[in-house]
Amino acid sequence: MKHFLDIHTTDPKDLHGIIDQAKLMKQARQGRPKGMTDDDQPLAGRMVALIFEKPSTRTRVSFDVGVRQMGGQSMVLSGKDMQLGHGETIADTARVMSRYVDLIMIRTFDETVLQEMAEYASVPVINGLTDRSHPCQIMADIQTYEEHRGSIKGKKVVWAGDGNNVCASFLHAAAQFGFDLTFTGPAQLDPEEEYVGLARKAGSKVVIERDAFKAVEGADLVVADTWVSMHDSQSSKERRHNMLRPYQVNDELMSHAKSDALFMHCLPAHREEEVTSSVMDGPQSVIFDEAENRLHAQKAVMRWCLGV
Ligand code: CP
Image (cartoon, rainbow, N blue to C red; front, side, top):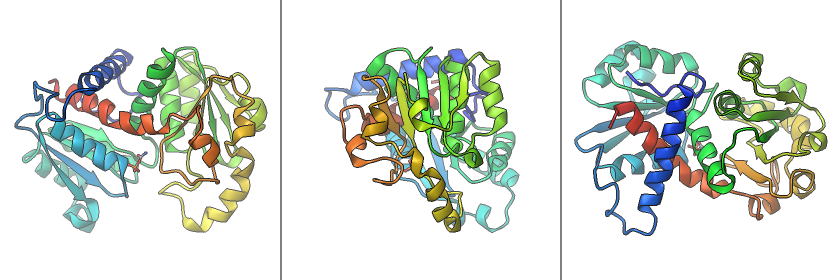
């Protein structure tokens, strides 16, 4: 059973293979009329369940479109409208869903929900984001970096802001793809020590630097994310904003990175908070390529899971 639960739990060779396939599938569609690509329809006759316990635009639409482009069918389910949201166990839900569908993608809060789903499902399960990680996003980000600048191996990635679930998946990827990661943010929002240790053990240089300007020196890629994630309480918003303000990615900060550094953000962004519009819409920004590559990367993830 090939679940796609996290980047650090997936074989690096498989990760590279997924990204190579994503690039090929993207190239195959470019310049061709809609409906004339994915000719082999690898998901024909397959049904994919997309379960959301949190809001989503990119993940929802890109998975749905990806399944259809590959000839499959998808159903988008809201966790709160399922019995899952009304006391049915995750294990029972997983066993029942496995009798109907060929693949399950779930976006949830607690990582243990994803893990239990994978343990009891007899079909592959994909992590569409938990409070702790967001692997599909980072697969798209690696694809995006490589399309613009070649291999990410040995490059310096700087994460500015909150050491959240997306940052965690960047640390997992640092270990698997061999890049270095500098985190710059307040100590209260440092990334999980376990994941910092994992990347360091794999040979990646992981630096914690409180001074954002020092952090971005020599950066090949600067990454920002929202200051208040979906699992953070709204009551913490003001405190988080006060702590994170020095880590805003703006033109001045970008000018301290390498002149050809890229800027990424998984979106949705809060313009003029964690990043200015001048950076988001500027020449170093690849944010909409990242969003597009969610589609291509996840198509390749689904094919890998199903072996098709
Ligand atoms: N980046 C991302 O996962 O976007 P959505 O929350 O819109 O799916």
